Length: 168
Ligand SMILES: Cc1cc2nc3c(=O)[nH]c(=O)nc-3n(C[C@H](O)[C@H](O)[C@H](O)COP(=O)(O)O)c2cc1C
Image 1 (tube, rainbow, N blue to C red):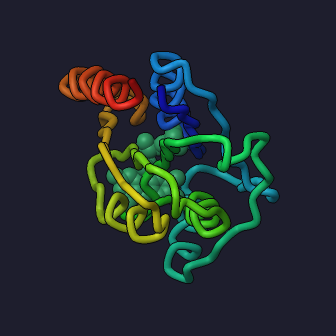
Image 2: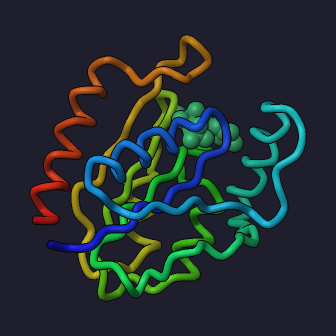
């Protein structure tokens, strides 16, 4: 059985965390959270503006080391929220700092309806040996973007099952 690590970044509502935890639990995988060294400060709208500046500038924030070694795993599932149509800057840093050239990467993302080029950008940045089963999850823009759309629930179950089959 292949060994999987689920790595994720989550800032707004723990949407990405929720997906990451469900995946890790269903697959018996290890899990690690990406965190910036300097926490984002201010209101949601202020961070949305700061995020835009960072994305536009290609800024790579410093991130804390995760307590797992990429080298120990065959498959790395990497989750990000959508920030200005691409991955969150912290995930950009993570992809830049690690070597996935002998790994299978499963990119996944959450969004509020404007998914942009997140998956394409992650594929390009990670330089993985294989990229498989990439998946987008849209959270409803009602209820403060905290609710996974009903249709996505089916997608989530199917995605997890496909990953489980792949790990066998
Ligand atoms: C800085 C910032 C930029 C965002 N840009 C987008 C965007 O371009 N498209 C989109 O659909 N949602 C965007 N969102 C909404 C988040 O992607 C969405 O709510 C996501 O599910 C949050 O995940 P999290 O709770 O794991 O942080 C943005 C949120 C933030 C904070």
